[in-house]
Length: 365
Image 1 (tube, rainbow, N blue to C red):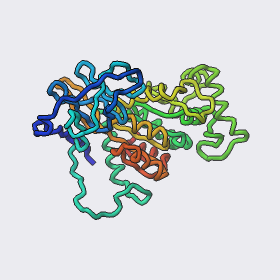
Image 2: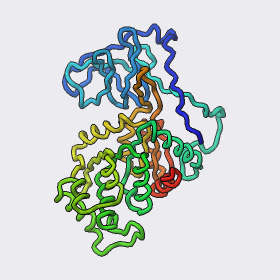
Image 3: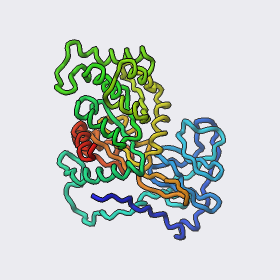
Image 4: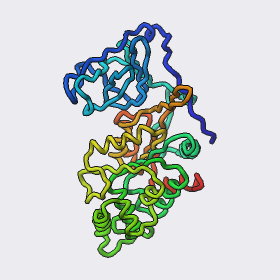
C-alpha cells in the first residue's frame, strides 16, 4: 500500500462569518492556576483565534486546556500552568462568532461513507484489520524518514521473548523515536534480561521459576543500588531487551509512576504532574503514536495529543495529521480513548505481543 499524507484544508477565511468575525477576547487570569470567567477550553482539533484582524492557529493544541495570547502567538497551557495576568481566550462558541474557530474536518478524506445504513462500523474482535495493518506498515516506513514515532507501552509487551526481540528490532530499524511507559514495563523488561523471567515466569516457556515472585523486586532493588537504569545495565552486563536497546540507541524514555508501583525503579518520575509534562515533551513532537496494552497511559497520551501537527520549514509551515493507534486484546480498553474525546484514535483489537511480532516481520527488522 502506497502512503501519502492527506492534504490539510484551511478554513475559508473569506466566508462572511469568519471575515466579519470580531477579534477574540483575551481576559487576564485573576490568580495563578485560575482562568477568568467564560474561558475557552481547547480541543484536539486545530483552533484559530482572531487577533488584530488575523486568524492565528494554535500550533500545540490539546484538550481541556486554555489559550493564552503572548506577543500575538497562541500558547496552549494546562490550568495548573496559568500565571496571574496571562491573557486567556474567553468565549464558549466555536464557529468564529466570538473570534474563536474550531476546525474538526480539516483533512481531505476520500473514504466518507455515503450510505445511511451499513453494517460493522465498530471496532471489535469481529473487525477485519488487514487493511489497518497494511496502512500501518506504509505509514511507519514513511514516518521513519519523515516523522516522529512515539510508542506507549504496557507491561504485557515485555512478557514474551518474541515480542521483546521484535520490538528491539523495531528500535534498531529506526521505527521508535520515543517510548512512554510506566514502572512495570521497564521493570519486567529488565527482569527479562537480568533473570530471564517476567513476573517470575520464563519469558519463552512461561514456566514459573522457584521463588520467581522475588525476581522483579530483586531487579528494582539492584537497579536502585546502582542508582540509575543506565548504571544497572552497565554494572550487571545487561545486553538485551527493550529498555537496554533504547538506552544503547539514545531513545528518549519517559517512565511515569502510579499509586500501585513496587519500588519504583530509579528514573521513574514519581510526581504525576511532572510525568505528564515529560510525556508532553515527546508527544508534542509526535506524528504517529501507537499505544499498546496500557489503558491509563493510553488515555493520558490521547488527552495530551492533538490530532494535527504543525511542521515548520523554510517556506513557512504546513499542517499534517497525527496518527494515533490503540492496541489491546480488550475491546473496552482499546476503544475507551474515543469515549474520552480523542475521536481520531483508531483501535486494533488483538494480542499486543502478536501485534509487535507481526510489525517486526512486515517491516523486515
